[in-house]
Image (tube, rainbow, N blue to C red; front, side, top):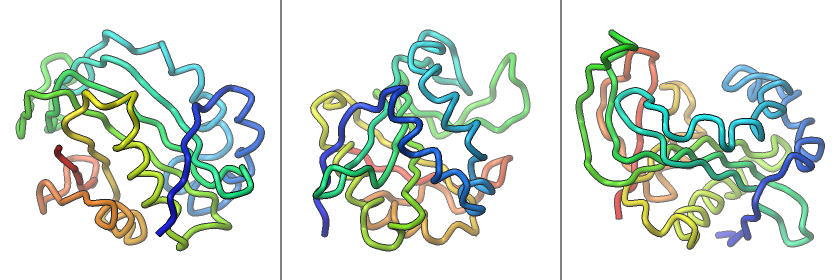
Length: 179
């Protein structure tokens, strides 16, 4: 298994990984180059807002690097005051369930399409969970489409477990790792 360093993602890094978003699978799951171009602008934008029954407390973004210092994966982590599942019925007054009153972090992971299937995604998830900047987080989670077998496998290999066998209103399954 790889061990990868994670370094803070900066606006200068966008150009380094933009080509990853030309991949059709990445575009289908997240979007094209516009998706990664907007990410740095989100770093301080939503802190203090409520999102689906949780209060946003922060955001971190990292690149994981290979042995030569080249980027192999990007990960975005938004932190919250708690974990909660939302039923999608009302944006104004969200109906939530599966509440865990502990600091949580939602993760979005993108692996360089040329490096998929080599363990970099799993290693990146593990590196973030172990990162000292998020030592206060008690529950990490990720949402994945039911048909995204590669991402489900990656999460499970990193120690994440399925929270509910039923997909949410957007068709997403949630996996989490509690510590």
